Length: 208
Ligand code: GAR
Picture (cartoon, rainbow, N blue to C red):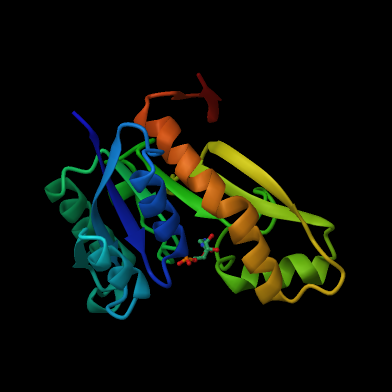
């Protein structure tokens, strides 16, 4: 039986697209994207899913009073969808232990920097690249890691470095990191997970 992949999104969904394309080429191993859940009703990622015949649902963050009630609702939705793997693909809400404990080492996130640099609360989307340029790093990149209740602190699965150019804008750096790193390592990590090749020991991952 294949593994049911549920993808969480908030925005444009280019990482979702990379996953859809990988699945079409048979590169998600034993995995199949069965549902896309958005935290925002106008997320373009929903259109990408619909165009590819994937079931969509929305769970709007603004409809919930706090992160705990939102997390409980998300946990129930994920259980209903019988998710074997949950992928944060540009999902901009930090879910609490109500979800993370129910799906320990079954949730992965792509972050647009080399963790532990430029990560944690407040580091998302373009802000990450603004900070990297502000600091003057010569190399940045992307990280795929397991999600735990502590933001961006779960075991690292894959990382890829990308060169920073002297005349980079946050937008240019974001685009290069997506093209050269995120769209490659996210589908790869999903494939490794779906083929049962990742184990976790002492907060570190090992790839078989
Ligand atoms: C991506 O760069 C992703 O790594 C980042 O937001 C962008 C979403 O793009 N995620 C975070 O910053 C999470 N902390 P997408 O919607 O086109 O995939």
